[in-house]
Image (cartoon, rainbow, N blue to C red):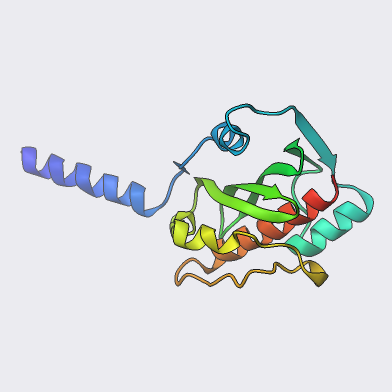
Length: 169
């Protein structure tokens, strides 16, 4: 009688894993704290209205779901915690921007069932030193990951948005 229960438990655990679920790699507050050497600066807000809203819509290829975006800034360094849908669920990503270039990218919370490889350093390091080029394109050549195309696109759009918003504050 124990064997069928064990098999059922393993099967249910596998199904839960296979269908995704929230994976918290790092709390947003930890990313912010780490980005500023342990002390979180005061929170600021940028309103997505007028030209900023229009340009953000062009970058994201849809209206960004938030009308106000929080950020943290100290000197020439800013941190942006942004979200974009991969296939069906939001991907929460932290961007550290310094002097108009991405210093680091971290996937903080991943909720999709596929494409989690965007969390790996081999992917996120591609954004290091990237800036925004003409036409709101990113200067880095971001390589796709087989099976994670939608997640790659989502993170790349967010990187472009973070760079653009940084240029506006």
